[in-house]
Amino acid sequence: MRLRLLLVAALLGITCFAPSFAGEGKIKIGIATMFPHPYWDVMTNGVREAMGDRYDVIELVSNYNSEEQVNQVDDLIAQGVKGIFIEPFDGTAIKTALEACKTANIPVVILDAPPVDTDLVTAMVTTDNHACGVVCAKDLIERMAGKDCNVVILGQPGVESGRLRQTGFADTLKDVPNFRVIADQDYGGQQDKATNIMENIVQANAKIDAVFAINENGIFAAIAVLEGENRLSGTCLYSVNGASAEIDMIRMGKQTGTAAQLPHQMGYQGGEVMLEILEKGEPGTFQVLIEPLLVTADNGNLQKYEPAY
Image 1 (cartoon, rainbow, N blue to C red):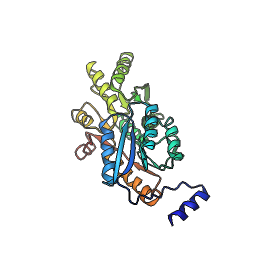
Image 2 (cartoon, one colour):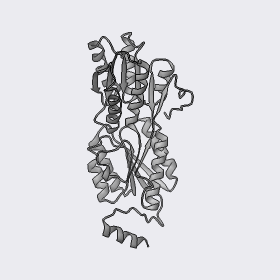
Image 3 (tube, rainbow, N blue to C red):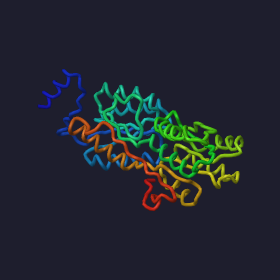
Image 4 (cartoon, rainbow, N blue to C red):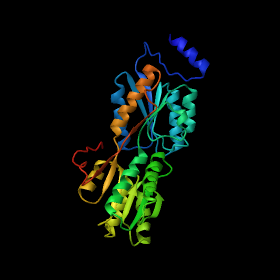
């Protein structure tokens, strides 16, 4: 029966991942992450829990380098993995790796943020990164209640998740009267770079009412710089991820809110999708979007949200 299905699929030009693992030991699965960070550790643990003891999940971590990530995917293919999870550092550059997986008939489940070439992947389980920016912007609009608002955006457009968060935030504000983006800078997701950028922005602008950063590194830099200049009070500050350190900042009144992601849930659901592909031949659905949870000191989520790291 399986041979008949494969022959039909070949005639129709359909990629088929129906497995034949009978008699094999542990089945190798690869996961290529963006860079060293507790967020990815939590997500990978979710993948491992979902897939269980039958699967050996091999994780390779690039270091803020898209070329390195592509090479790591090639390495995983060479190791004979049966499926690969990819958390793309660069949504465009990862195309080479996706093409290599397609050529090798290895299913790819994208985690965290979609690549540009979604037609080359088997399934995606991601945070709704655009919504992360939207929920922060909507909360800011409510808090400012029509007042003049000078906004700083600390972004990372080279990473697809960062671009989506930044776009969601900026697009929500663009037609709102009295809101003005006075600076929009790429800090590469790194705190030291964000610190230098924020210092320059503070020196150049006497009035800053709000800061949005695409992850906690950016907002921690903004908090430190503004606090050092005695300009933190009254400024609305938002970020994305929901790390325990962000929650601490919210409790202390230094940060307004965070669009919390759920990396363990994302990894676990990604593992379930990969199992569907490997054991049934296809995913139940192509894309699973996980909504962020906005956590502020006054919206009720601070008391019930538990940070993943």
